[in-house]
Structure formats: C-alpha cells, structure tokens
Length: 155
Image 1 (cartoon, rainbow, N blue to C red):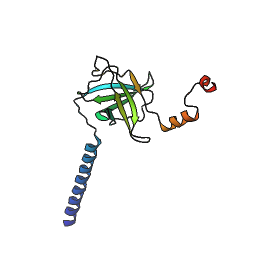
Image 2: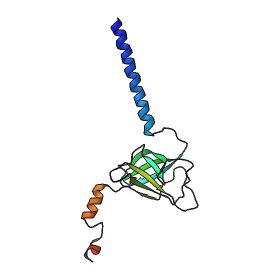
Image 3: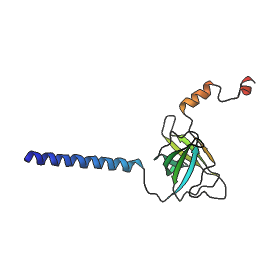
Image 4: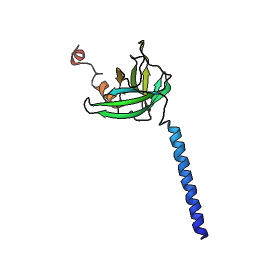
C-alpha cells in the first residue's frame, strides 16, 4: 500500500515538472494568441523560412509577429499574415522583406518604412515584399555570373 502512494506522488511530481517546463518554453517563445495589434498581409513567391512565431522587426526592434502562413492556390504564392503593434504606423508604400541574422541565422520580417501620407490599416497588403535569398541561391548566382543577362555577359 505504501509503495502505491509513493508511486502516485512521484507521478504527480513528474507531471508538474513537465507542465512547468512546457509553460516556460511557451512563455519564452514569444508566441501570443491575443494581441492588441493589427494584421497586415505579405505575399511572397517563396515563404518557406517564415513560420508562425517569426519576429517582425522595424529598425532592428521587434514590433510584431508572424501569426499565419497560407498558400494561395490561384496565384501560387505564400500569404503571410503579420501582427504588428498598433503603435507602429506604417505608410502604405512601406515594404516587408525577409532577412536573416547573419549568414546562417534565423529569418525575420524586416519592415522598411515608406514616405506616403496615408497609413496602412487592418488587412492591408504590402505592395513591396521580397523573400530571403538562400545561401544556395547566392552561390548559384555567383557561379552563373551574378544574374547578368546573356547580352551583359558577352559585352
């Protein structure tokens, strides 16, 4: 009888430790379900390196998070939904680019502020958005002549 009580207590301790570990990991991940920001849309030809929870930064400072990634089967594009802090007012000609921390670092969305007088609002789509260049693409461009056309290569 005493052994069953000891096993039950040890099992409860293990379950509490596992729950505490999961809570710490979730808290440190920066992923939040509810936000007081607004959602903006970014369309990319290749959005594989951007997943929900990815940072959105402006001037190097985190101002939001990627909350959703979908595939548009008509335009064959990745549709990325960003949750941006409501204090960050972006002009409509702003751009969103996928960048990396260093050569092999984590990807993030970098917002470049525009100069237009009108401000983006909930559900707007960035007119200018570019994906990240992978190391393989950069090496391929260097080997093939840096992306120059055939006319430029022969001149």
